[in-house]
Length: 196
Image 1 (spheres, one colour):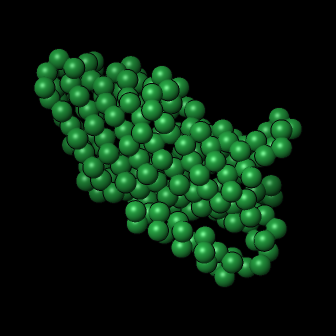
Image 2 (image 1 turned 180 degrees about the vertical axis):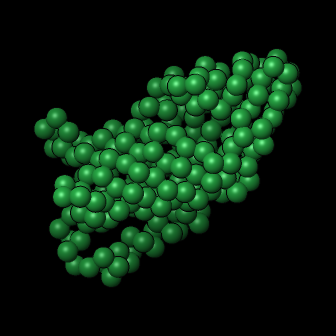
């Protein structure tokens, strides 16, 4: 709720903070996250909603509720959160970003972020569980392209966030399976969306 309140306050006061030139480029946008969702068989939902204040500044909220598959968690090319088999999970995130765009075309950006994250891991052959909730702070780098393939308002947004977990998950051994430590966590988001 605090993140949503902060998001609303920034929208209300953005004219004073960023000047009158922002009136020319104010745009709402909404996108669906495709990479994490495809790796987890599109179970549940992940996406973003945001506001492009002007060519250099935007704010956005990312929300995700993802049922994590055993294959995704143990893959060295995907999550690699688990070293071994027989663990599935659940990932919930609400993350607020402030993005600052750079270079001539204003496609590349750097972000500051804060989030609420819940990670759950279930051992499929025993009753062992991890259920961890934490606040995070972090940063991201990304690339956003609008009017993709000549389709007006269609966009892609590729983002690589890095987070610090205030309440970390220690390395945990369940028989031959190891849950990796969650203190500094990153992933890759790839959104496809529409800017109004």
